[in-house]
Length: 287
Image (cartoon, rainbow, N blue to C red; front, side, top):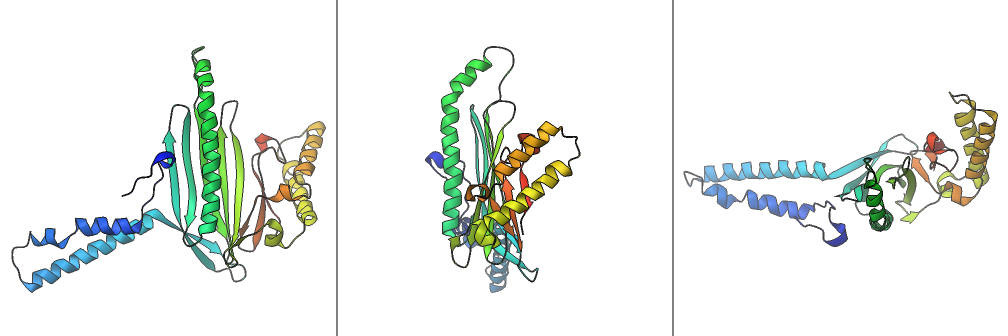
């Protein structure tokens, strides 16, 4: 089984071709033949059938272990469409940084895979370099008293949705670099599997930025202010409305993070973009 070198240490990869070779060697007929008590054709064919059955079962088991299959809602008929993908994992534990990364790698979609992998890995390597350079200062703070500061964290998860033509992947990255709490950032990838091109929210929704902005602002007012379970002072309500108006203003940069699920389109807002950190991630259906 191949092992990655250099910066890619920790990446788990299991090519089926390698698996087939390993299993055929383990269950080689020569080894089984040595244990036979007779040389009859009946024994020969019986052992061959058992060998083939065991190989088939193990290959099926490994296929389900290392490959996931996303069942996604269709646009019109409510049916299901499947995209096969592999779950790539990177796990590292160092004094200055704990890394747990997961992202998908799809069959026969190299452009999408390249963009996802480049985004995830380049951001992680940049933060890893930053974390290492800051570690001496962290150690000095740890040694000043009895309290111990935790190491930095870099955690990446993902979600796959889509329909018959569009495949959506949203990457959630949580970063802790000290302080009261960490920070969460989002990145989305929306790929037209027919045209083999990436699409934006206008193409996915067939709406204008003004229309998207209006829906998002009204939904956020209702969700965060009008239907809020906690009492909001007038000054805080004014500040919240200002954040919503700014974060959902009709311009391209505010609606870059979106996903498609069946005939629905969702816009996502990171913490701090339309509300304070305590309000968390906001997900608004625009269609």
